[in-house]
Image (cartoon, rainbow, N blue to C red):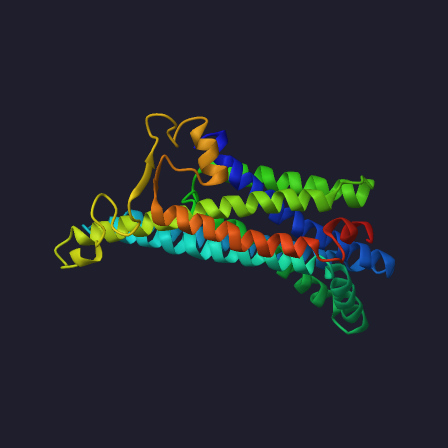
Length: 308
């Protein structure tokens, strides 16, 4: 895995970690306004618990993937392909839903957090409630990062982990510049650009999910299980229909610049009809919902930070 292949991991982790960092910054700002900064230790406990939970989930998924990879038997490749398709589908669903949800919630998230903190301060044991608010924010974004790494089958890849850590470090640095130094960043534009990149990257995951599903069905048809009827499309594809292009000799997707197009835009040097249709439908539907959400009036992520 080289720099180009690590770009989508960096983009995903930067965006998700910055969202969590902004929530943490808002909580700390609310405590400062209420002159209750002695409770900030609970904020750090919530951060730590969220990070630990995300790491544990990552270790669990990595163990499952490695365990499947080491399973003996002729059906192991089928199981690997099915698992890759399943994780990819879950990642597509979760990342898409969270993108739309966060676009909508950004308009009111500061008010909601303010209300939660005020309620926590008014009750006995409010520090624990504050920790829960922070924990949920951190673990939600952490789970998305872990699922994306799992879908990319890069859970144990040092380069992938390095790209993820770089994205997290950059997000934390940006949050510190905003809340501690008072740097004015155009967060609205940042999240719009990152959201658009995320849509395109997730569209690439859709193509990968279909490829893995087709591979699994193809291998099933070659076994002695009597499942050859599943492969009903003639040619080298079982489910994807006719091949639209084969650009392996002109623009291979495992070499520069093809690998950049693959990791960021879903490009494949071999593309089939069903993949192209699914990719187009995903970008059309999700893009319409996403950009419609951006045009609604309300608090943007930039306003969310500035009001803090």
